[in-house]
Every structure is written in structure tokens, then in C-alpha cells.
Length: 71
View 1 (spheres, helix red, strand yellow):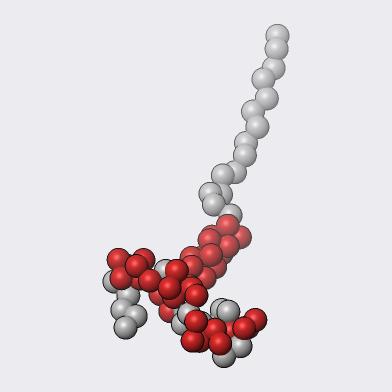
View 2: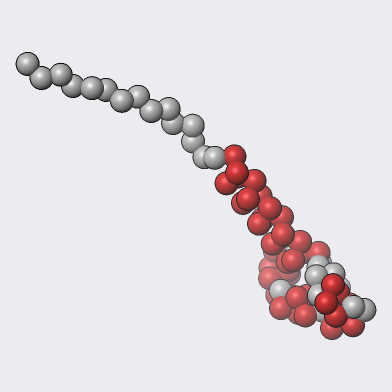
């Protein structure tokens, strides 16, 4: 007579670290698209970054499509 074994494994769902990582990525992306006015590049370029607004110009149309005013 053969015996079968049953293995019970608990399913917890999505790991907390994955949720935290995705929340940080979302928050960073939201900042870049919606609020950045040269702050990111000012770390490397200084005050010139606030005049050039590279990321602002890159995400300009996306801002308006998402409903964020920038003028």
C-alpha cells in the first residue's frame, strides 16, 4: 500500500518589499512628471538647471495631458 504526503504551503500574497519599492518608483515618477522644475538636475548643474528645465521640457505635454498646470 502506498502512502501519499500532503505539503501545506501558506500563501501570503504580494511581499511588502515589492509594494514599498513600487510606491517609491511611483512617487519618484510623479515628482518628475508633475512637480520637477529643475530640482533633479540642480544637484549636478547648480542654478543653471532652474533656467534650462530639461525634465520639464521633456515631460511638458505629458503634464498637460495628465492635468498638471505648468505655466
